[in-house]
Image (tube, rainbow, N blue to C red):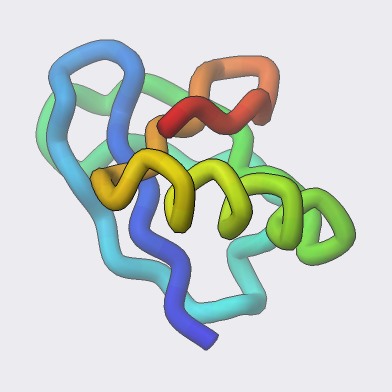
Length: 66
């Protein structure tokens, strides 16, 4: 499974594999450290994406927005 995360600082996106779930990553563009939600949190995020039909955003606390 591939996870696409958007940096809450600069808006840069990163394409990650499932091993990044429930971890903190550093944005390649601006260096900000932010959390990727765990795999158990992803179904909720996927439902948000399906309803919004857009990009999902993950903030520093690992909360997903779509």
